[in-house]
Length: 406
Image: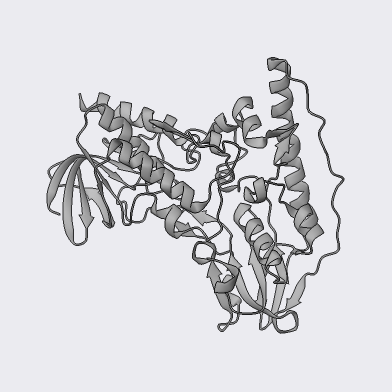
């Protein structure tokens, strides 16, 4: 693929396609390169029974909104892929599928050089929209597990039948960890969940989905400078689920069903697994975040003259937990890692990343003329990387590209 293009967008997920939509509207020549197909991450890195946690009415991408008969439902993986395909068909983005960009560097004559399957593409402008799920993270101590133990990354899990017989330890208690714990428990497996610090929120508050409250209160419009630290960009989204019409799913509901909650995973010594005695602190952290969210709801109610909800505020949760488990005695034959992701831009050969690996940018624009990012967690706002918010950032990035070209 030795060719030149005005603008190269790397990634054909919601961020890349949204940027393509706005560039197409502006008449800008561009290509969208993806190592797979349109919406590949949703296709290949989600389990069989996956459902969105965002209700259908909240999905808004440039040029399309949800028009089905279940606005308060939660799309399955197949429905979401179909939604993406319909959206792409509506504006025909110039996607080059199955095209892996292995390196991005400066071209000697100016602009950028993209290495694609040993060939090169030259671009005047580049938008890196490779998604927020790049490098699966395994916590310290992961390497100490016995070599013969079956281990699965969350992105490689498909369904309970795909695992060997026996009980399951899930390490990581964000949205994915909780949903897999519920699914495996319902399938008859005994499930152990190693928990970290995660926020939670009721699925519905005063009859309205929590996403409505997040949207209307401005919670999703928070900017990075409002975070307590740069590391907070890695905090998980609130524990919840879109299964069975959408319901609460958190430490309390999982404990009530019989999932055994444990503290943070520390490592293994032979067949003995070790966990921190910090479950209470993790639960308190989530409760504190729910209190923060209630503050946003209260302020919305005050300024919009909405009746304040009658909140259900649970008492502090204190249960006796174990700090050691024996794999053999407990019949644990599988460990699933759902401990999040980290940025991986090692293929981008420019010194524009902070200590955590995130690109340093303002409204998507970096210090390298012509190099932009899209779909990064907390790029501009809390909603920057999600289906509900990515379009706003795409419009801003596309506008900058058009203005800088002239």
